[in-house]
Image (cartoon, rainbow over the protein chains, first blue to last red):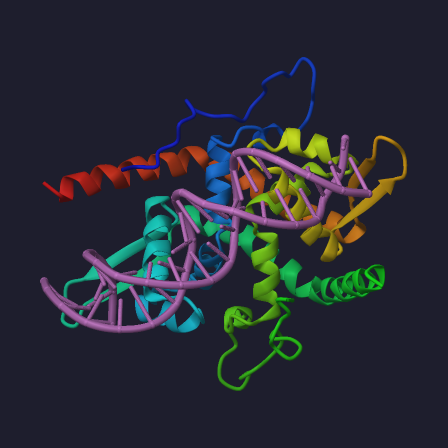
Length: 145
Length: 145
DNA sequence: CCGTATCCAGAGGGATACTG
DNA sequence: CAGTATCCCTCTGGATACGG
């Protein structure tokens, strides 16, 4: 019951390079592997988990406590996906009570920089966005008059 | 029927700065505005739309054609959200047949850099991720023996 | 051409209870 | 503590048809 990628191998690189020097060929087909990965990385909870694991080792419960609103189920699912993608390392210490620790892999570490910049951008521009929304909503209401 | 943010004003900055110099306070509460915006920006279709509008003006149909798999409805919804957030400008030319053009606002342009880096990362590491998945699945199957 | 409106299936995701 | 399993419901999002 695997949701394996149907596309043969890749969909980046040059296809149709004789006609279109478009640097954004990647988004063309939805069975594109890049699209699959983007969906995974741009996930609501994945984003938060990766950001939190910046050079820190965290236990399951610690992660759950830090990420407000995540259910046990979704945290588990998210961590499994990230582990499968090789972004997070899961270590089980065979003691009682069980102790499971999560940390970023080197690969996951490289993603962190990008995600960090996304978060920073959001923090810096949240006021502009809030203003834009208010203006839009106001104009919306005016139109309905 | 607005899904307006319930939190008072903000949730970045220092709260509890006496105890924890954690640079990631932002993710704490789920009604946090930063979280709301992250969800919007990290959206499946938003990502693709913003990337495609890099210094180009595109019509509705052109966007739909370029983004394989998007339905008319979801493209409309996505564009409205982006417009409301002040990231995309929508221009209606009053001609027949109607001509509607979309472009990034200056604010949207600043986001583009970040998204671009996310896409680049994905392209560069897709092979590593694919390998990690295979290894994980193989180990998975071995465990079930 | 560029939408909006309506309907509806299905995945996402929460709550709860149970195991090692 | 760290999950797995189950139920169930909401909300996403696709298909279709219609309006400006």
